[in-house]
Image 1: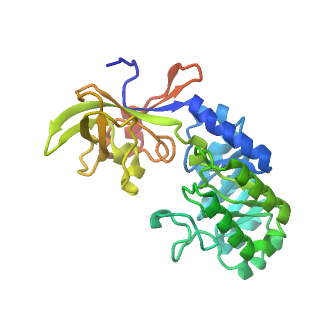
Image 2: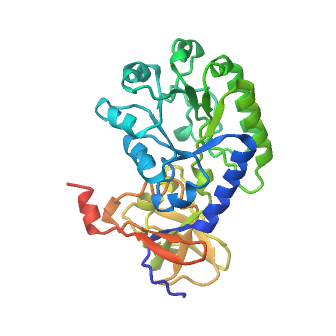
Image 3: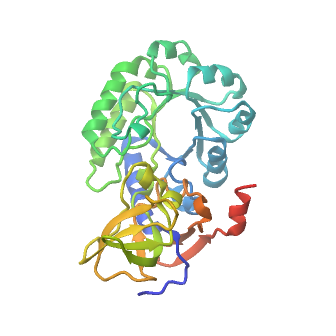
Length: 369
């Protein structure tokens, strides 16, 4: 077993893999004319923003703290959006943002007078999406996410600079994206003609291998030309696909009907989306004659990463690396059970690794009272 001086558990961000995504995004920017802003709700680990800002136009947020993080740590354009702005926070949001995007007409009417002349946007809900998960479907029945009636929006469109539409979710199917965008145009085109920009949100997996990037670029440029708008995309997962792992060590090996291994991390505390969407983690190459159900160390009975195959028997101290640990992982980590929170480590393009953040007992104490 190879020794590593950095104590597990830790998130390992690989800049070389991150760069591959960023270069693909740069290709899309140049071919389509679209601007790309990072969705901080998905990934906000600012220790690699120095690299990301070279290939992106700024950030978009979901809260006051994300707006401020985008302004202070990333720079470029800073878009503010919230499902519901709070009155006592709103002035600070405006102070850090370049664009203010509202979720509803009621929020727009309430807060627009306090925006100081900054560009204003409104979220539209087209009633269609690519999501297979009701939990994440912005077009689910009775959705609160955006305005659905073009006639209602018509009453304020002359006070708006743009629109935001976020209806894609893990969508790797260009044909599906194209068809939905055509439906959106059929419904909202008269409104698009009266604004300067339209954000088509995130959830488009255009950095996946084999995705028809040229077709996407052509479709975005055609949309922009037809409606005479600046197009924005808000990539989150696409920006950081396959760019980080959760590095763990085995603490115990046992048998209860099948071989089990317990690692020094937890799904609920450190890869929460695995539980939320009832998915298994990724272990590569996941092959070999020795198969184990790999479990987390929390007290939650269902704290399970998944069942995987290994070339050698696992033992205390064996290392297991879980993939896809960038998107919606570090932003959702928590102190459940008071477990040691994974450190954050960056692997530079020359292969060197360095610790950029370590969490300790005082961080746990300070999160409570």
